[in-house]
Length: 427
Ligand SMILES: Cc1ncc(COP(=O)(O)O)c(C=O)c1O
Image (cartoon, rainbow, N blue to C red; front, side, top):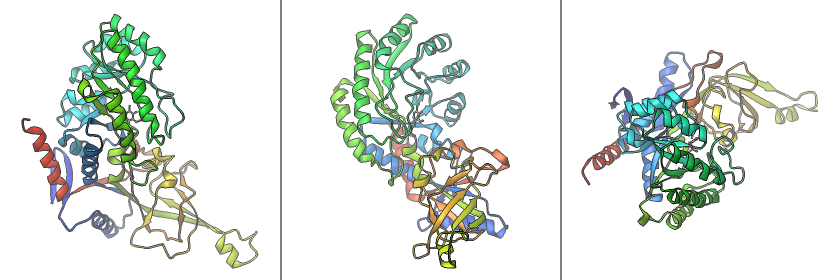
């Protein structure tokens, strides 16, 4: 069964049809045409599961999905139907989200360093909430969007997280007083504070530390007469159940910190900008082995058995670091590929190097996966490929990125419709 939400084809799976069946079907369709193109299957039901999990674990925090993480139209449409807000970083992201029917009030323009024409565009599309972290940004906003509601982003330079963002963005606490005075002089309105502890944060305490810092800046704003009523705790939440940090372990620290520093009775609206949390587990990539090179260490090996034991197999697959693996540098080694229709548990595993399809020697996906001896034409399946993959694809060297097929189980689709209906009905 197929369904269309304005321009996006989403296949609703009958009860007994699984994502694996869809992968089978796509591979068979290609084989009938002598093709072996890489592709993603996106299970949009995983977004629904993550959303329900979020509501259970962080009931006080409204998620504004970070569009940069995966801007596929079906992904943002399903999230929009469930009433999510959106964190946009550019004119085109704002256009995408407004054009699928999301009101400007459900968008935060959360790039602290914006182009003037993009700020003007945000104003023209009813996007009121903008983040900033420096004085020059305030002059641009005063010129192009004087009615904006501003959120001051603070740095979280505590100790290196997995992917730090605070070298590039965020005001230090000691800069905040001056920035607020500038905003006041320019007659701009500050309504809150935001931070981002770094993507895929592995130090749980960074969130609580940042919430405490945000309180200090909140109080500065209140002291200067601003009506401070938004706290934005950013992104950085784990995306897959295989991550070092378990989402619920993190939220078990975040919730009490919010209750201490921003108690519910103070009426502060708490939002977040999760990206990878929502989409990581929804995408599975199917890639084909298009070439192979076996390197035997015959010179230093004294016999055939030793040569066999020390050989390295290089596989060249049809997606690489200029495609879906671009932004996964810290995670590639952790991905666990499986073999399509083959079990390799009882097979001999070899030292393996996996390369992408381009002629660039940097297109090396990983040297740590251990795989058995496979043939050209075999398929590998890689799970957890939804975050910072399809949104950063390039066509370098003339290789098209993999296409994505979007599916959702009937049950998950019905849940989306139920949530939508509930959100639409008057409270
Ligand atoms: C401003 C902002 N918000 C949210 C995110 C999403 O982060 P994550 O995918 O780690 O949740 C990012 C990622 O870079 C970001 O820059």
